[in-house]
Length: 250
Image 1 (cartoon, helix red, strand yellow):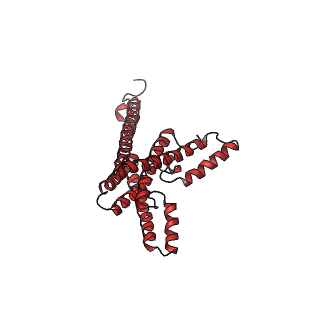
Image 2 (image 1 turned 120 degrees about the vertical axis):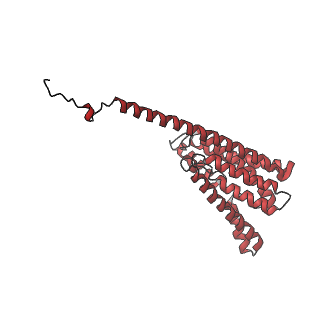
Image 3 (image 1 turned 90 degrees about the vertical axis):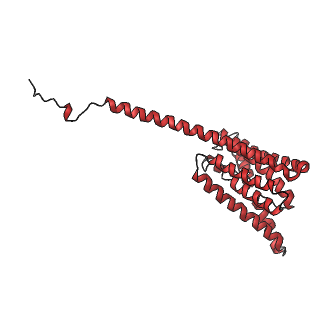
């Protein structure tokens, strides 16, 4: 598609985008204008609140931004530590954090928001730094820029369908936002348990694929070892025992 991203990675990214939109809609409704995944909007609101002297509002925005960054750092450390299990380990952490938020609904809104902001930060480390780094999971500004550039490339004779992937990601996140708003209207923040289920499903999918990848590497390595062993058996001995003790002509 001209994105350098394989189909499987794009599918996972789309589900992650739906998840991010769903959670962000919930957070936005609770916070009344702040986001748990869209830090550009939070930066703008924090700055304007500070200029207007609304220090509490500015502090809330700054706190959410800080928690999001901490989540990115934590998710990256986890993913880098278990690279093969990156998707499984990172999305499991996301599931745990969203579960904490869902379980805290009757306790404190602040804990709910903190857990969601951390979860959205962690989610951005779910894909590897190679193909996955080209995709925005919890925000769409960069995705829309790439969408527009891909359309321009197509019009200029470049890859004809490169824009489809980026447009699909935007639609995924938008669909998640709509779903989150509808679910919140029906169930309130209890609807976060649906997001937990999606994150767990992604973790299971990542674990299954990691195990398969490990098994495939094991078979590949065993095959190379067997070939090396067989090759060694075909080499004639050259030690003292292989030297003919009889001189020529005897």
